[in-house]
Picture (tube, rainbow, N blue to C red):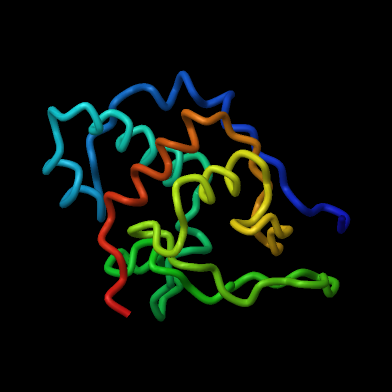
Length: 154
């Protein structure tokens, strides 16, 4: 383990705050209204809150435009890692994978990443990915939100 890494975030502390319903904005505004009134709407909105406001997944998993701003048209579609460690860190990832549509992972694999801090095949997650020890409800909400987003056509 490198000094200062990995960062551990426990989302249980945010569970009560995440249970409030927030109006959709940005890229999710087009997708959440399609399911409003369904039992999944609350879970998806809670997942949106955790992804966008707590874990800040877009900071690494969304590409940036020429001004360095997040590209809302490629929301959570994967991106080059724009931060570099001061000292070399073995196995540092050069790209964050796409999350929108939840491509390439089963629900169980996604839960393992979010709850147990291991990759889909049990491998160690590559820095700068944060370590998460979420409860199952938070992990399921995040997966529901990511699945509600359109997958990249690439």
